[in-house]
Image (cartoon, rainbow, N blue to C red):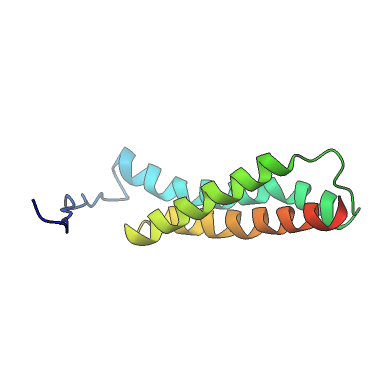
Length: 105
């Protein structure tokens, strides 16, 4: 067995956006990719605007940061635009929250 492995990927199916549920979902997922990071903005504002970090869990936000980083890397490697879009924003926001927690604890 070789030390180097080759990975084969299945060819992606292309869905017609105008008459397919999968095509509709493909379009909708971009909206979800934008909404998810927006939902974390109130926490970011709480930490940075109010300089308040007492009720925010460092372990939770550090985990969120690591998870979004790995999903971002995965999305880049597999060229999945919704994953890259959502997780690049989530990674940046989560990282700012963690930095704020370190500063204002």
